[in-house]
Length: 85
Image (cartoon, rainbow, N blue to C red; front, side, top):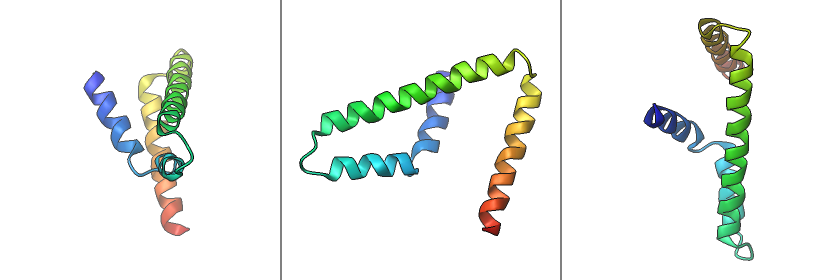
């Protein structure tokens, strides 16, 4: 399960706007690269914690199947919106 979660999040994060923002910070010669790494890592940990806690809370009220359906429909709508836009 750990590998599946790691792989999914790793692929989702590749090339997204947060990674590009991290790249821009790291490209600044006056900024310590370790501080950029630490800040980006802490931000990902914080957002992951919110996701886990939110998922655990929501799952107490909504079934896993319903959550999968909602997520699937949401991704389809975002895709259609992206194509139309």
